[in-house]
Length: 130
Image 1 (cartoon, rainbow, N blue to C red):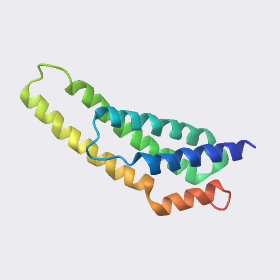
Image 2 (image 1 turned 135 degrees about the vertical axis):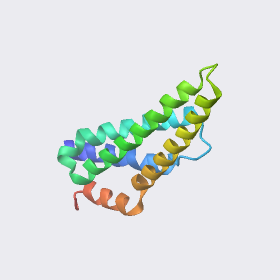
Image 3 (image 1 turned 30 degrees about the vertical axis):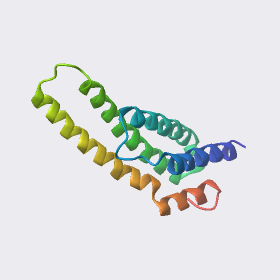
Image 4 (image 1 turned 120 degrees about the vertical axis):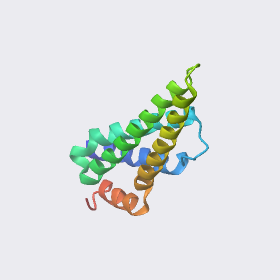
């Protein structure tokens, strides 16, 4: 019973993230932060259910942990950049760091939404493979 419920929650959360979110380059700080919160919710279900759901769930949890970590760094940087009176040189350095963090996020996200990973996760959650 628990396995079935956890499996449904993880798959539904993952599917909704991949289908509806579609992170875009033009998102502002708020959009990235909201996406981070959605990823965290799916990650927590994945971590909670992984003992009975198997290795693909552990792999998804690790990928989502990477996503949320990078997005946390991005959010922290965005909050600091909102401060008034930052020296121009520091602001320029922060913008460069922000671009690097965003690139890292999109690299990680591509691995989360990868079609072959998605299919293997779906099989694992339906109990037909790990």
